[in-house]
Amino acid sequence: MKAVKTLLLSGFGLITACTQQVAIEPRPACDFTPMLIAAPVAEAVLVPPIPGTMSAMPLNTVSITDVGITNKVLVQAVRARRTQAGTLEVWSRLVNCTDYALQVEGRTQFLDHAQAPVESPSAWQRVYLPPRTVGTYNEKSTESEAARTYLIEIREGT
Image 1 (cartoon, rainbow, N blue to C red):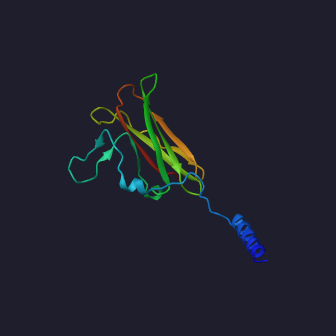
Image 2: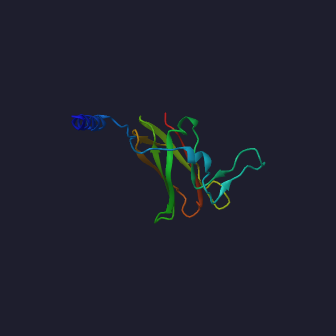
Image 3: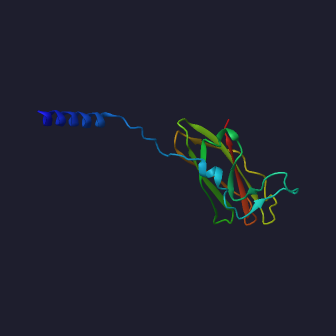
């Protein structure tokens, strides 16, 4: 009788365990902690003319300029390549880490070998990011061969 009772209680425990709900985080799961610790490795940086007046800004990266989305959007990748026409094409993959839709805007500043502007900054371009999705911002320079480095700026869309 004791063995039957133990078996029944064990079976009840298994049934209870099977019906318990386990919270599984939806993908993508974002962790902003490494972003706070590590700075992007930059080939080139913009530095202020007077040391200490601002921090150096890494080039060939994304700068999130809006504090309202710094804990909502992660930059997953930043790449650049030359087109057949010789212009510089840049793109960045952005991850919406929230449970609601976001719209962000991006623009790019293209610079020459001396970090002088090659052309005016591009127009702000809107990127729609549904909840927990990945989106891409891309831009091409208009001046062939002159653009050597770039800075992509991202802000929350209006």
